Length: 135
Image 1 (cartoon, helix red, strand yellow):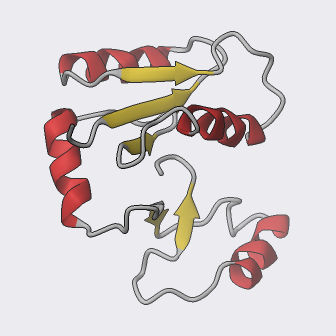
Image 2: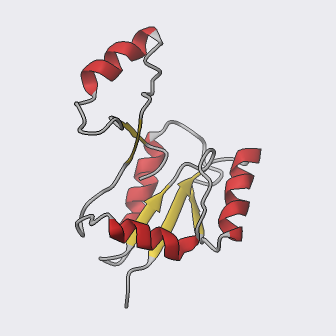
């Protein structure tokens, strides 16, 4: 049996952006697993808990791809996603996170500036800031 891709998202309620994400995934032939549906939203920690619970049921060697339900569009199809992932040489037990140029919380906000400059380590690329939108 080869690697299987499990595409996950976490959403507690419907929104126009979430509908767009689901429709684009369907059009690309991506099986999108929606976690947290109709749960009361208590905080972002729920995403991690739900993803960890799902991961516990996945056979070793399968690949989990998590993306935000409200601002990620799934393109290219599962085969293209797997080819790209495999080209990155991620170790079997490794985790790959998306990173970006900007920081959240916004470094321009009073509480964000210190957090972004002090808590994020230097990076060998301009993409210093981990983003939980895709991992």
